[in-house]
Image 1: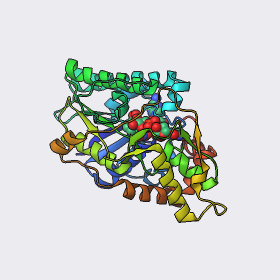
Image 2 (image 1 turned 60 degrees about the vertical axis):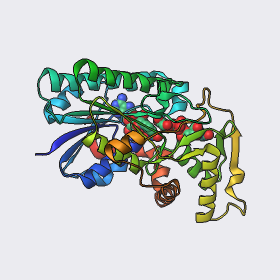
Image 3 (image 1 turned 45 degrees about the vertical axis):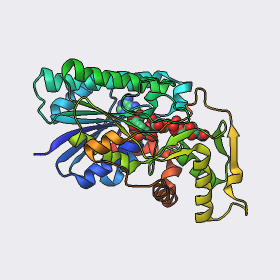
Image 4 (image 1 turned 180 degrees about the vertical axis):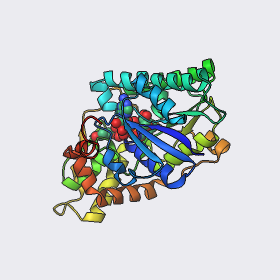
Length: 356
Ligand code: NAD
Ligand code: DAU
């Protein structure tokens, strides 16, 4: 008997990679992918798995209480991996409302429906799990030394991280108050295929290919801990299968890089693959621009808990992950083009028709 797994936000960057991994490696799970298809959702990214017998797509909003309740009942959902969120820090600075709505109220709506179905109606079992996917940004900003552990106090500093921190608190509260089998993961910066090109790596790649300026915020010295998306997805499955309920697990890549290092590396990789741009190295396109307000200086994850308890550690070095990423974007330029010209948003109407 297959277990039905509700994946929220499965048409976003990490969700697409996760749904693909589950369908490729697990025959004990049926995936229901619930996604609103905001600007960040790209149904086309899953076009080749659409007819997979263990996959069902539902367009909908995680804030829609009636829809979520109906999904739990109709599909007897016993596991949730909750990715759906507004995820871009810059957008949270110019328009925080959607972040509060989706990240806080949407997470609450999912938790509440899981509680009602599994606990109040008695339809859960020992294997029911609610995995809330969160971020290292809830811990704030590090100085030159130190790492985020699961015990680091929360100190969110952007509307995005404040909304994620709030959702983490709700998830944890549902474990302590109701005994809901909640797990939380806090992950560092992901990179890899299918990432929306507003984020640093795909944005720089696309601009470098087009010969456009490469915007680096502030002095380029901010540090992120980069993790290849496949490693993150494997970690999530490990936590879902073997994690202890009520626990948080930090997930990181052991790859601290300044933004300038990342951008320079991308320039050199593109030069090497497609040749110089008018005989000039692409590093000349780097343009220092105004800093992000409240820009966190450094993130770095101590991932020893998930390593020691669950035996997970990243498989890909930064060099290996970057090779795979740059190659993927070069081979799939039509994917980036359809995102940049907006035509990816026509796919739902074309495939599912109006009113569906
Ligand atoms: P993304 O922005 O690429 O995708 C988000 C997805 O959620 C989209 O498909 C969008 O359509 C969907 N969505 C948004 N609002 C919705 C709503 N109200 N109802 C239903 N669906 C909705 O995000 P991502 O980068 O894939 O991140 C996924 C999750 O992982 C997020 O919760 C994010 O906070 C977390 N996270 C991301 C990173 C990273 O580096 N990208 C790192 C750590 C944690
Ligand atoms: O740490 C995990 C987080 O990583 C996730 O929770 C977020 O959802 C995800 O978006 C990501 O947040 P960042 O803000 O770190 O990612 P972003 O790609 O937007 O920026 C990475 C770094 O690069 C950051 O220090 C800002 C800088 N930057 C970004 C852009 C878009 C630039 O210098 N220039 C740019 O044009």
